[in-house]
Length: 397
Image (cartoon, rainbow, N blue to C red; front, side, top):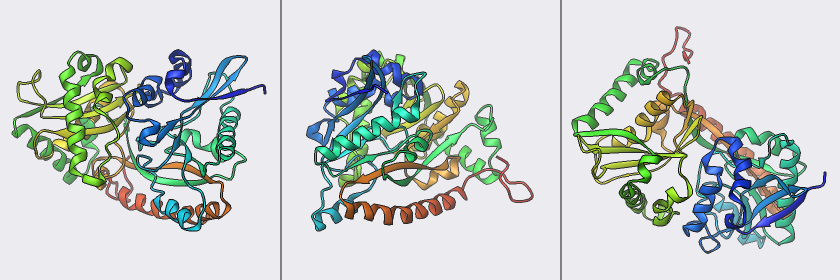
């Protein structure tokens, strides 16, 4: 197969239409040229912030047939794959770890990364070529390893089949799926009585506080720059509350320039004082939207309102998804309370190859142990799912 490979040092060096001819096949705005370019052009994801863009392109006869976002990383903040202990061990034994090459959607703990492949091409073959080329380039450049982070589960099987000695690491995430609920009431009808009462109480608490919520489509939000300015405020404030444990990786410019790069593919879940839908929002949650899935990303509010987080980040998006025929919703990682609201555990894969043999053995020994712990944690979390059970004790969903 006559494939020509090249690295691009940023999305600006890649034709938007060419990249999106591949990315658009996967119904994921997080893989789009617009999102990845905005991360770079806003100053959020750059070599200076520890993310050196190094995107890999594969061409046949000048035509782009495969591509994937890669970055040379000087640290692990924003990977959401917590490999700090491995990096520390490498330092103690004098083994290389940083810089490392990662295949990733930056600062996004959702399983969406994959090799993008043109329609009609062999995904397994081209995926193996791209990943193999990335590993070879990283090794030749003296990097510590190749790490494929938060991989789309649909793309994981071909990665497992590659000849590279990659070790798989699984990470707790969540996914809500429409089980034929029809509408929000149908979703609640599938709950046990106590859990249904809890959701109704939480939504009523928001209304009693004089708050109304609604989804604002990208097209409407784009003509109201105050909303994205406010989203930037909330993003900064929410992260500031967590101090050194915050996850602030985006600049304000990311939000204010968003409509330039992404006319669609995102929505805001917004809260306003009753009758003040055109005024200053009390709270906002930002979600990406595909035809078949929502991805919840950031949220914040100007003041504490009981259960507002649940309303904007879970209930209103679920109601929206059901009304638009969107079949699934990834709310983001973390928070045990997601299970009690119908979000099932999903173990998201990443794949790791350390070039130093000692480090590779550390990954090979420890990751199966970590994976067993994650699987047990997921089992415990899923025991809290709210679905009704039949007489045999089996969930009715």
